[in-house]
Image (tube, rainbow, N blue to C red; front, side):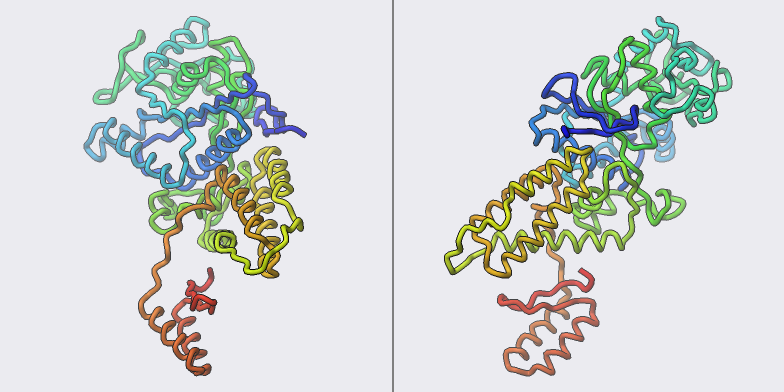
Length: 467
C-alpha cells in the first residue's frame, strides 16, 4: 500500500514522496505568545510531535520548523494593559509555552523561529511581491491583491467571491482594492513596535512571516505544512498565494496536514464560557501522559471533545497498560517455561506499522497495543509467558513509546489520605486474625471515603474509586 498522508489540497490520501528521498522538511504554525497556551494548542502540537517521531522511526531525516508570532495586535494590546513592553510580554509567554511543551514531552522541534528575528526576509518578500505586481500600498500599509493570483482559494476550495465574504479580522481597511486582500506590511501607530522599510516604519502582517521563515530555511518548496483546521483559510491560503507568486513554483507544499478541533463539552473553548483550560492548569491537576494519550486516541483529523469523564476513562486505560508493563518487568516464573510461540511481537509490530502508514491512524495503532496487553495478560495468568517473551514485548512497547510518549513515564504516585491508610492497616490486621466480618466493615468504610482496597500477595493495594 505504501506510506500515505491525507493532503488537504487534493482531499485524498497520497503516497508520501518527499522532494528529497529520505529528507523531510516540515513547518507547523506556532503560537502568538500573548497568553498561556491552552489544551487546544496541546492537541495540535502533540499530533505533529507524534508525526515527526514516527517519520524518524521510519528512517527519515526530519527538519521540523515552527514559527513564533512575537509581534501582533493581541501582544501589543495585552502589553498596554500590563504596562510592559510587547517584547517582554512575548518573551514571558514564549518561555511559558516552551515549558508546557517540555512538560508534555513535545521535543521534536528542530528550530523555533521568531517573526521579529526575520524582518529582513519579510521585507525582501514584500519587495518581490511589489516587483511582480501582487502588492500595493495604501494609507495603513501594504496589501496583497488576491485578484492577481488566479488560484487563490484552491486549498480551502473557495472562489475569489467566497473569499470576499470571509475577510480576516485584522485586514479590514476600507481602502483595499478587494475586500479579501490581506496585509503584508502594517504601518505602526504611535508607541507600537516598528521596523524601517522602503514603505515606512511598520511591522509584518500575519501571513508573510511564515513564508519568509520557510523560504529562509527550506527554499521556495518543502514537504509538509501542518496546523489546525481553522488556519486553512485565510492563513494557509495566503501563504500559498505569497510564495507561489514570488517563486513561480508550485506546489509550495507537497502535503498539507490539518488537525481537528478540541472542544470542551461540545463547545469551543472561550474564557467567557469558563471552559478555557490552559496547559499549565491541566498539568497542575493531571499527569501529562493523560493528555498525550487522550489526543492520540482520536485520529488527528477528527474532533476531540474534552471532559472530566473522558479524562477518567483515559486514566483507566493508561493504568491498564501500566499494570501490564509492571507485570512484564516483575515476571519471574519458577518453572522452566518453554519459549512460547502463541503470538509474536513481530506480528503486532507489522500491524502497528501498517495502520500508522495509513495517514497516522493512531486509534487503530492503540487497538493493536490493547490486543497485545489482553493476550499478554491471558498468558501471564496461565504461567505461559517466559521472561524472554516479556522482554520482547517490553522492547516493542518502548519502540512504540518513542512515537507515542505516554507509556514509560514516571507517573506521580497518588497521595492516599492518612485516615484511609489507617483503615486499610486495621483491616489487614483483622484479616490476619480471621476477623472477616470486621474486615468487611472496614472495606466498606474505605469505599465510602472514595477508595478501593485490593488484596494482593504483597499486601493491600489502595486505589481511588473509579480508577
